Image (cartoon, rainbow, N blue to C red; front, top):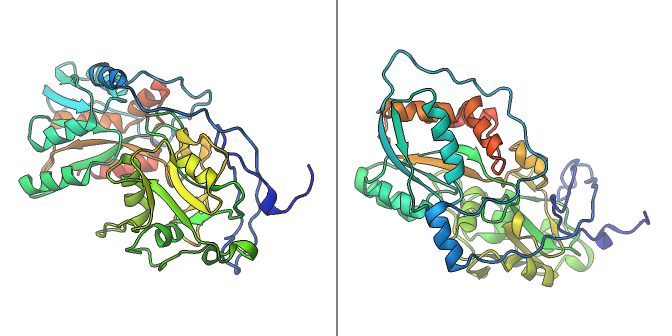
Amino acid sequence: MKTTSKRTILLAAGIAACCFVFRVGNAQNQEHPATRMVEWLTPPLPPNHPQTPEQEERGRRFGRAVPQPELLQPTIDASLPAYKARTDVDISGSFTGACSDVLPRLVKGWVDAFRKYYPKVQIDVPPPFAGSVGAQELVQSKLDFVFVSRELRPDDIKDFKAKFGYTPLSLPVSGGSYRHYGFLDAVSFVVNKDNPIETISFTQLDGMFSKTHYRGAGEIRTWGQLGLKGEWENKPIHLYGIKPWNGYEEFIRQRVLSTPGQRGEWRDDVTFDKVVFPVAGRVAADRYAIGYTGVAYVDAALKMLPVARDDIGTACSATYENVAKAIYPLSRLIYFNTNKAPGKPLNPALQEFLRFILSREGQQVVLDEAIFIPLRAEQASGSRSLLD
């Protein structure tokens, strides 16, 4: 391989992850060793297109068409607890729920497996399949639970709290997918392929994209403020994102711009698109751009940045392995939502249903479905703690 400067190494956004980076130290902090990188050039994905009205209607009735699974699949975390059925209490009852249009097959797998332990439990999750409809009906007390392939809308939470005086129980029950269009793919921050930047942190992203700066970075407007030198030092940062409200936008707002008890607000000069589809192309066409998009939507030659949760942490690339291990910080989650008053127990059958889902056997259902990624033991433990 011919030797070139870092600035001229082109990293095409790839099918697997576009940029595989192994980081030593912090490239933007001179007190740490220089970053060392391993790069692969891979072609961008073919473009995806919005669903047609016919496809949307089919999804509401039957669920979305299932994509081809990844050739590689994760493994079940051996530290997940095995499920043990309860014999000390009667587990029975009838329950009605809802789910997003990408979840009917997974939810059916959980229900069918659970009923082998407790045949007296009847759980129905009928169409229409749409997480937004389910969340609204949860507020209206028409459902016992709803599975949603994203975070709840702020308005749903606000309406629920206004009615009940507390927020709904919302706990992760599965990882998202990796790069499946429409099926909760991981999110990445991307820059133009000519950009020499090698890593980015949540603090730096908050300094660029927000006007609230709850992570304490202050305003960041030039590439020089991120440590770039030479011709890049005084160049402005052009910001690209997705117009609120959107699942990707809400995910980044909660994960990057917000801190506990503080909801971050976007800077006024972000260039917003109504949907995620154009973002990769816009960044590819703008030398000084940075934006966020789903891995499934990287259909242009870009650099996908490794991301660190804080300025002294190790930046992690959006590889399949890192997403499957739940160490990539912009991996997404599927949530179970229900009405649970603080300090009061769930119905025993729903409690056991969730204990099953969060067990080794429950996450095996996720693995067998082969689209979404099973939770790691630490994630499942965090969800179980919310049941108390």
